[in-house]
Amino acid sequence: MDPLIYLVLAVVFFLQIPASAMVYFDAKKRKLKHPGRYELGVLVPLGGLGIVVAYAYKRRELPTVSPDTSQTAEREGTNQIP
Image 1 (cartoon, rainbow, N blue to C red):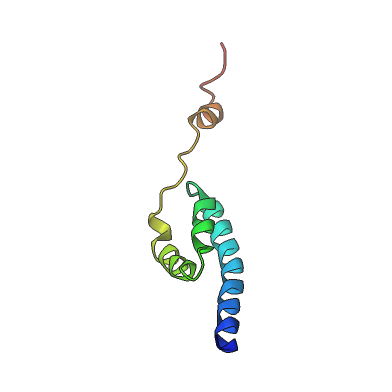
Image 2 (spheres, rainbow, N blue to C red):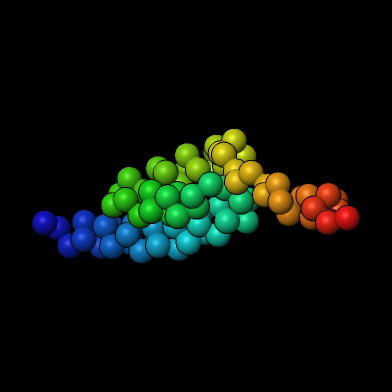
């Protein structure tokens, strides 16, 4: 194979690593369900770059973690014993 192909594959692979970290931290910040799955999807060899584009396009529509009802109840004072 041509050495240029090896160089291109290496560059693409090394671009996927920071892209996966960026997706992971964004998913955690947005409190999405299973942020690690999005990160691992980006690390798929050569296919991950397409997943980065799909994630960026759909990130506002992805399912989030539902707020814990017990924490909400504690803040409202409904869990206090009379």
